[in-house]
Image (cartoon, rainbow, N blue to C red; front, top):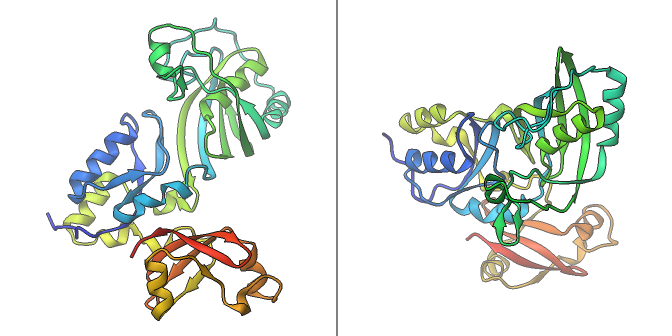
Length: 310
């Protein structure tokens, strides 16, 4: 197998298969690349498939910027009864009620679950309750008291109905449980429901069109073409403005010293200045267009290199 450079850094968008955990995927990619420093930007449940961005090398330090990233999914909800896990892997915990999937009633219920809502996580989740994971208590059939949390559902769309199932698409904030959306829909319709299938189509800027399977990644490494699978550091945080520094300014940033934007780039000077003056984060590049730091806004025109990569 062709070797991968030890300083390889960036993001790999993996198309996660069903039946494995996100940790399993990380472990597999560590073996494929021969690199230990690998993490991920948001887990997927074992039964779910789709976009799982893996951070490699220096990219692992970017996790802080992706904790609450916008996510998109497509899936299938089956109506008729609920399950204890809120998905197809669980046991039925309600009597079967023949569903009458009225399109207008479904649309109304989905509209009620759109926007900023309070959502209660599933009992079988990684949320902590009294120092223990909720799923540990649920497996022991102990009470799981989870508090509702605020999430945002940007869009919830019906894609089709066939029999007792509905295909749907959803865009939501990080921290949203799509399983809970399915469960809550069933509660509103009075017939119970659970998430039968789920496929994640995007996390922030990482989209399914650029995803590769584990086999495709393995083939790329063997063929010496792993670069074709990598999202480089410079392409991360695409909505952040960039600032190019040279000479002493570059050295100052590398050493983590705060700096002021040039006079022409300060707020109130028009053009780029007004735009940069409002942003919280700047990507700092050197003359070779290599990303050397990510800086956060301190006050006025002052920024501090919070993440130094050089």
